[in-house]
Image 1 (cartoon, rainbow over the protein chains, first blue to last red):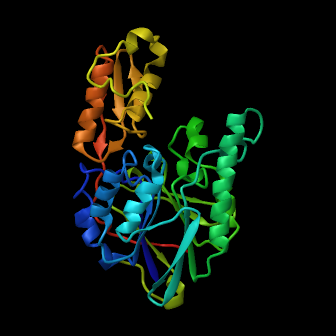
Image 2 (image 1 turned 60 degrees about the vertical axis):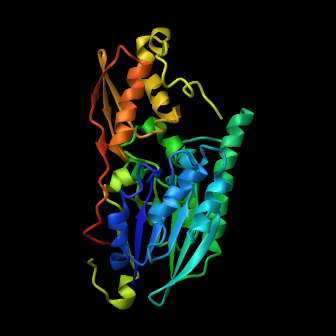
Image 3 (image 1 turned 90 degrees about the vertical axis):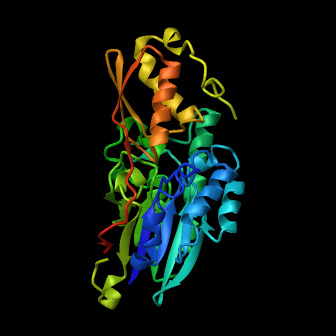
Length: 246
Length: 99
């Protein structure tokens, strides 16, 4: 059994430090790892990244994150990532990590992701240079996720993104903005590998549960959606016969 | 990178006078996202004549107050009904089994 805690869109700056900590201090009792699905900061500054590490660092369990669009706002995502990695937190962007937990290997592959839309209402690589650049960005990022997922050997594989891979978990958002909230290419990447669970954020007014066309469970863990410090998901229960429960 | 909402937080702007009524929600939405003092993309804005009803959730009371302050500063004629909540951050009490 592996217990995965997850949250996204925590938007930390000094104003929020201490808000999550009481619940995070209890996390090692209920989960083996924490995944954070982007928008770690408000404006993507190094100072805010330090506030994030103050709040989410030193938990006693591994912490793995991807960046979100807010973490790019100051055009220094590499600096943000370095501050976070220097605090011992793993930052994924087209990469993966494998953690040994309870005798199992948990693989996590992550990218920020990007927009583009979903089947029947998606952007195409056609027309103006700007539109082609937009769709090309989507496809490059999704391609990195596919490579990271397919290249990870483990017992349980999780995809971690900020943008949504399916429209199911956007239910509640205005349909007009779906193309800015996610893209089908991320879902296709997730379906290309034996992914057990896909986690994302970004859609504050979306809903919690969905599935990819290939049947992979998708969970929107944006903080305004889950309305608690983190959710906990249990993987590989059948292998050990463990009971679900905190 | 700067935008038209940066650096103007303290000055009442003529945005409302410059923009026909039908664009007010879009202007407020962009203000709340692009102004560094708010940087909020998750706020809903519903227009009821000269009143806007704000919804959604933010991480702190200070951020909620700043949202209302920025709208009042930039659109002084607009009345605000603020239904923005603060997201709870308690520990979970259950686990979901994924199969």
